Length: 149
Image (cartoon, rainbow, N blue to C red; front, side, top):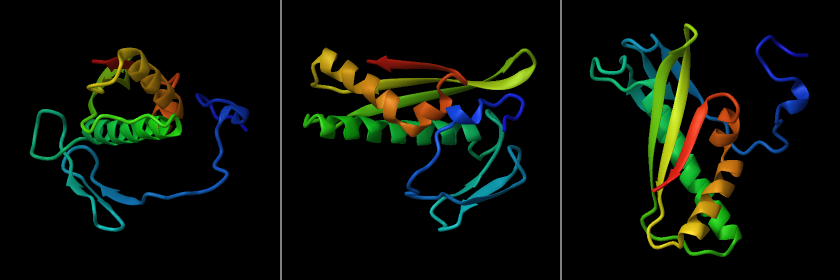
């Protein structure tokens, strides 16, 4: 079955082995809402970008994706038996904008892998972009730029 705007089911990756389920309870939305995970480790207040004292969904997405992507880099390096520098960094930028009147996102991941040969670092980043679940989820859906800095 295909729903308007979605890919045919044959293109959807299905979970063969469940590793974890995150659960969050959210009320109120972007302006004055809150979200709390079932284990209490995350408890945030929301506000629109540039107003209020809360965070916004784009900030959470940037933090989540950059954390996951860095783990993907470490995973790929481990499989290749490569030693990563002690201080890899990802500065994520997530844009909220309009396209033809609809809200949309765009993202940039700016990756620093000091001390690694640039060719090796570029290869790690490219492979990590293939295995990172956030990268896979956004592929073909939003503009994404991966920069090795």
